[in-house]
Length: 120
Image (spheres, rainbow, N blue to C red):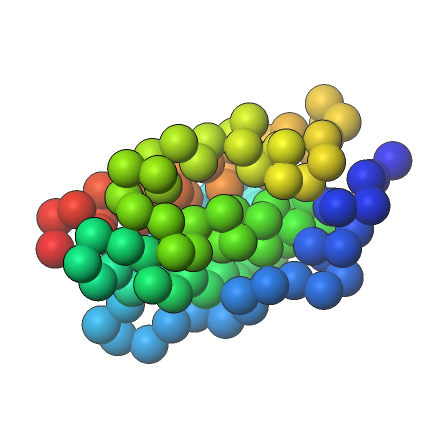
């Protein structure tokens, strides 16, 4: 089943909601299961200041949105580049193989968000 960390992120998600403009926002979707994650962030002086998310999908996908937002806040862009699927999975206390797609979705959102933030 799910770890206590994952259930905490699901039941009490952090950073819920998207940030208003001029925040950068990206959207990713898993075409197989339909999970969706939208991630937004603001950047100042090379540091991610605020992060918000909206997720639609399974328990693991929603928890992964909360986890990845937590992992990104107050990180430099260099530090944020290290937020990958393994880091999200670790923040969630591990994932069963059937739920690993949630960590991949979150990592895809991070990669897209960083590309957008770096081009601003």
